[in-house]
Image 1 (cartoon, rainbow, N blue to C red):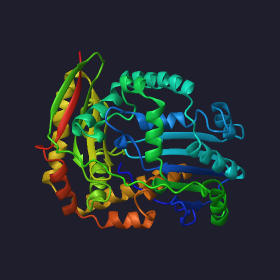
Image 2: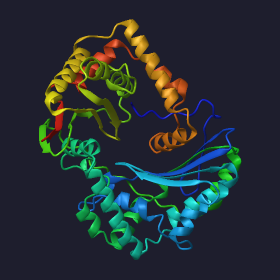
Image 3: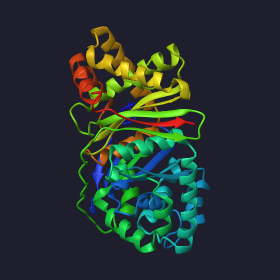
Image 4: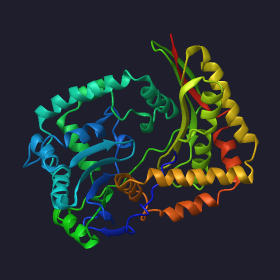
Length: 419
């Protein structure tokens, strides 16, 4: 499904504020007793220097390992002891540290986030322990071919470019990290003008701003000009590797539209028709239901700042892998050759709108998506705004994007073939 960033229709409209140091705030008030608060930093794998792959992810781990006034235990216990949760994740383009807690604990959550983001000390002893943990995470990932193939496909799709790097890094790179590397990357990229704080919870906007100002406002303003390496030239490929697995795993895909491209919503709808979460998607109905060739088959679309990635994943028996791929290519040809009729298009839009609403019927999803969105846009898109964009998509629009992204001359593939 296309990543769409909206505000929860059950929440009060988003309200915005900018601290004197440039950190931007967005808050949505609800009647829920549970609040969600996250800090989003516009830095990720794409910003890492050559030879330091995985450093963003490593720092995401290390900020929980000690601050100027807390050891790791005290950080982890600060919210957990009152029933809250503290978590974080890293992507190719941003990092998030977020919390969930009862509304009573807003000040505690805000203070803790400020402490770990601005006062982390990256203890040397903890660094060495965490290196071992991350290497085990990498090894675990390598033992799961249905996950690993996405990374390998993206690596080939963005060959010799930061977007093609693994978020986790490599064991060799992880072992070689020095405290100097961590401090330099952290100092350069964790800038106040790259930060967004997003909140969904049962406090008023003025009170939310008061909490955040108390713990974040005094941090010195720090800015940095983001220089993203432009996407490299794309050359389609057909790759096959033999693996000691029970199934063959395949990803078929292409470069796709960037986050602000005019065709982003049309392609999101088209991708949903092709292989979205609905059991009635074309790929599921043809490859799984009709022919029984695959247990898992779906398509995905992730827009980045200046490019995007689209693909189809399927896991099949080795003897039926090629047949399944032929069926997939046949479905892509149908979408390139035949414009959807008015009834088909209307039904597809209804399904897409419903799936978007269900996906964001969760306050934590709204907080996470809101933070992501505000890093790149000044305002969140409303549900009505999203629906309007979907309603304006025509059959001709879908045909146009299908012929561009599903062009067989531009489509690549990677297969792990079972021995």
